[in-house]
Every structure is written in structure tokens, then in C-alpha cells.
Image 1 (cartoon, rainbow, N blue to C red):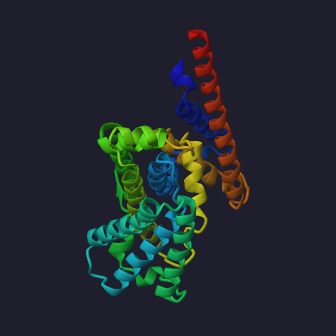
Image 2 (image 1 turned 120 degrees about the vertical axis):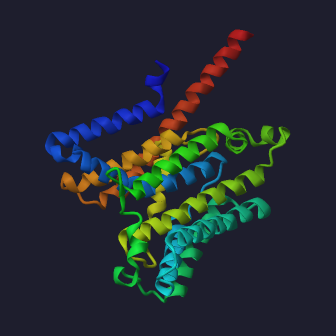
Image 3 (image 1 turned 90 degrees about the vertical axis):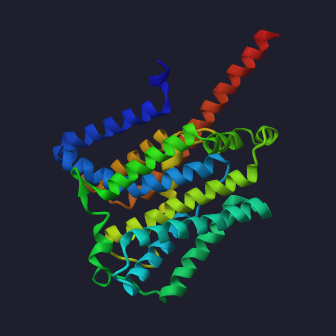
Length: 325
């Protein structure tokens, strides 16, 4: 019974119902090839959302993930143009290190200077976009300038699914293990659940938040390469506004904005829900621009749902205390 009431079960049911409703009008939507395509399209959102989840769990937020993606992706594209023979694994390593470095900037400002995370990441979001413009003078890098090996990796298929989708699966498995089986995962939940109690158990709250920003940045950097290589284009405003979808995926998936509550599986389902909506809108002849409105509405509804659940639990605790007296 508890499983049926869980956020993950409800969200999974909503995805199934939504997909079934779409399939009644357009049966091709549930064809295996199309479902694989939807999952692959959603993989970048899943990867970014898992990084954002870690940050939100520590009572912070990272609004710079899309700008990190864009800057790292642009640098990867510029490296490829300058050194077309450079192996792709080296470029991916550069993306991971650069993304982690940009995330570390956010983490240091929050940890050492005590600046609110929303202020820090709003600032760095603008700075990262500005740096892209300074590097490129507003010019685009297009497909014909990129090497075939650079753009081929995310699209290459293994067992019928592009590598982009498999990378999303691998990152999810790693994150499940980290959050459930490691000291770092327990520290992240402890810091978000009760930072004062975490200090008494020997956990450094600031350092844990710093590590969370580094993880988020690293995953944003990885997504930067995957995004640019898959779409074979790089420009200043790439993934503009995508941070809204990333936060929405986390909140819809049950990650509490107040920190300390949320799961990797819930986050993945939240991202998948948005992915299905995004891919279904053109099919049912609704403008994709409605996605922003839907994402915003979903955030408000999910936050209200989370708040109501929190109040209900609080009442149960108070009633238990009254009975005990």
C-alpha cells in the first residue's frame, strides 16, 4: 500500500496514463523506435536533473546549469575546430573537468563567502553566457566545421539505442549507488535534512554543498559536449531557459526545495514526464512554446503538493505527541 502511495508510483502511473491517451490518437507514438527516441531526447534533461537534485538536496539551487552546458559545449566545439584530430575521449574529459570547475566556482562562493545560492548562480549564469559571446563574438559553429568523429558519438547506436541514451542510463546507475551506498550520499541527505544536526555528527555543511555544486557542474559539462555534438551546432543562447525544465524535473520528481528529501528514481521520472509532454505537444498539434507554461505550472503544483505532504506529516507527529502525553 505504501508503494502505491509513493511519489514515484504516482508519477510512473501519470506517465503511463499520458502515454496511453496520446496513443489512442496516434498509435505510432508508442512504437518501440519512437519510445527510444523520446528517451534519448530526454537523456540530457535527466543528466542535468540528477546534478540539480544533488544541489537541491543540500538546500541550495543551481540556476547556471544551462549556461555551464552552453559554455562547456562551445569550448568543446572550438577545440574540435582547432584540433580536428584530437580524440573524442580527450574532449569529453575536458568537458567534465571544465564543467566541474565552473560548478566549483559556484560552490566556493556559496561555501566561503556565504552568498545565497540563488544569487550566486544567477550571477554566474549571466557571466557564463557573456564569456561565450566574448570567445566567439557572437558567431556560430556549424556542423560542417565539426569533425565527423566529434558529432558521431552521441548518435552511434548500441543495441538499438543511441549512446546518448546509454550515457543517461550509466549516469543514473552511478548516482543511485552514490546517493544510497556512499558516505557522500548520506552526508548530502543529512545536510539538507538538518544542517545543524549534521554539524554535530562531524559533517562539514559548506564542503558538502561545494561537492554538490561540483557534481552538478561536471554533469552539466558532460551534457554540454553531448548536446553540441548531437545537434551539431554551437551558439551563445544554446539551451536558453533550460534551467527551468531542470528544476521542474526535480520538483515534479519529489525533490523538496527545502532540501533533504528526494530520490534519483523520482528525478528521472520527473524528467521523463516532461520529456513525454515535450514530444507529445507537436503530435497533438499544440505549440512547443506551451512547454514553458506547462513546466512552470508543474513546478507550482508540485511544490504545493510537497508543502501539503509536509504539513500532513507534521500534524501526524503533533497528534502522536499529544497521545503520548
